[in-house]
Length: 408
Image (cartoon, rainbow, N blue to C red; front, side, top):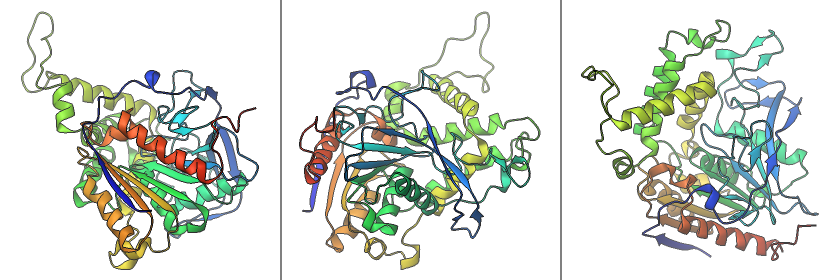
């Protein structure tokens, strides 16, 4: 069945603590080591590699209830629950995944995988290279979304999962879901693409390049081999995050949060006109940038933003998205948000129109939410009701009508 819908007047988000449903509790990072070489789109080969993962819920007897969650730029395998390694670290999609939540872990076996090239446990630029005994650094090979999909498929193989009930992701995660549908059509039943796009616009590539230049021109970058110099290009990373963060929020959201509110001058004096942090929005962005620079790897940022730039499944079909999507056999759910100007609804509609042209099953929801691109991470009642209903439908399709069927 093909349906199109629009949700309007979405309410304000609530906190994760108030989200309907419970927590998956304390979760441990698991590691999978692969000795089979991974041939990359760039022509390079990773002879071996490690992937960090987390899983929630129980895999049923016929392995039909698995859901793979693909992460966006600065996220990781830690999708839900409380990290055993860091009790202050709550999963980045904890309001979406858990017992009784839209992606219900009483029903589904949910998998989070940290992508290759990332800095949260999987093999990446900071990993020690066996051939040299030193970090890969700038020598780490260029990666694409398709490379991540090939690596994720090996995780599914290792877990004994031939076909995923669903693959789901927002933003860059949505690109991975699309790639799965095209490159591994027989391995997924449902494809959930949220706040995403079939390719970046020139403007988006431009934002990424400004962020990369901030990092590359930082004196502490040292051509990507800053590990050997015991430095971190914190200033460049901070600016990169500030640029990115502006694009994740809507103008209305920023106006409501900060407006033109100015901070009080420092005691005993005035601001140095033009140079100090005078506006609340400046203070917020600097805080976000500095926090990001303390935990994220600069080379990882460069790799992942390039993978964003390169993603274009219609490149091989002369720009024809319908032809690119022709191999897909999954049912699709696409969700966009009206104030998302980074990946606006028009980009999701391109995918929907291509699917309709191919007579492929698709459901589309355009949600009127004021929070910009970040809306896909927030606890919006109508958005979550939509996701709950869709995953209810998946559960029924694979015979998981009861919420407690998988519980002891």
